[in-house]
Image (tube, rainbow, N blue to C red; front, side, top):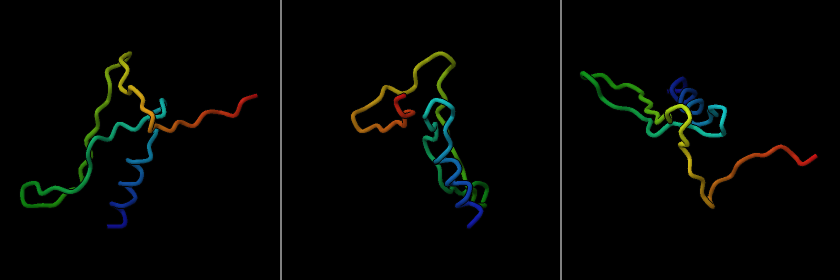
Length: 65
């Protein structure tokens, strides 16, 4: 379980270079009688905006010079 928790934290905190994380679902599921950890991602097509923004969004910006 502790190794799975490490993978879970890594998936949720990964920044794909544009300040976004593409994980849409993760958890455990039963497949062919065995329990497995799964991650599903919604990666945008190159050149297409995936994120529209929101008033609830927080983005880190470098300090003003």
